[in-house]
Image (tube, rainbow, N blue to C red; front, side, top):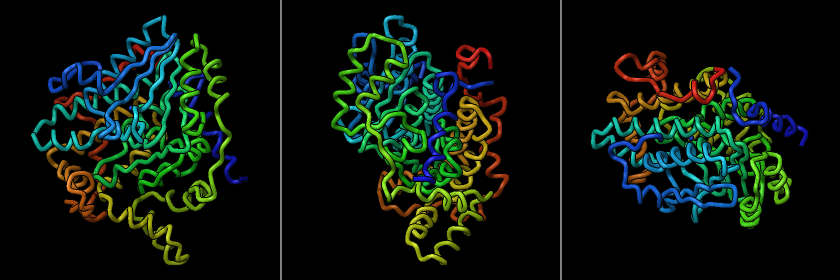
Length: 408
């Protein structure tokens, strides 16, 4: 446990002045393709409590993957709840399925691209990223109950909040490089602030963290076994307060003290740092190959196998994204990630993303044929183009920074 002690202070890095992700310096208008209001309401349910509201993600057949209409409704709900003086705090949870949220619905993006509807893809990105920012600057206490599967954008719509409750069933992962994409929704902000180079490890391999792991590295604030969640929700539902300390005390009453088990990757943090601290993907892979050959440990071989199967373009772009995220605020990360997302769905590179989704989620043959199949085919200039300003023709991501953070 001695090596684990340094992981705990991360939560202090992610909080400031008693609020989560307040910076010192995860859909506000329904797009033309949005579903009817009744479908939006079915996919995001609302529970009203004495002094709080709960948003419930309700797409069990898709592991609660976010659609444009869902994000649009979340934005409207959260903005209205923030302005309502009768609401003290807000909650979010997944509906009756084994997932909290599996991220943005990339199959929907795939279909839109195949139909030539790139503007609607952009609208989806804008809506999701705006919600991540609103949650990251939310004025009221927020409780996310992250039970079950949490992938990519699912973390983006929960980690920015004040309280993050995980369970013995929580599994967090960032599998984007395996589908020819990149971790977005603020991922470059959160991952870059994990201890050492754990963020690079998670993003480049798609490896998973348990709820206990998330507690140890500061991504979660409270841990509970799944069976206690009804008690937690009942207790929170009875509260008449907007005081974060009262909410925190209530969560503490049902929380459990937990440590990563002996199989946790966090026990290998020094090894991870030695492997994933290198400047380039080529150097990271070389270090892994050397370790695998020297040790014969199957763990290194498994990591290499996942990296070999991932998109070389996505690997290089993702590594650069996390490195830049270390020196940026949440809004800056979201603005940059928006540029990167548009580049991935551009005419020049969309085949990379579509092939990854086809291989892993549509036909499920798990053998993507990447258009850029080798790291040496991905030039530095090509990577740099994913981070360049969009220019006059394409507007940048418009976040309400001046309204929500007037001191910035």
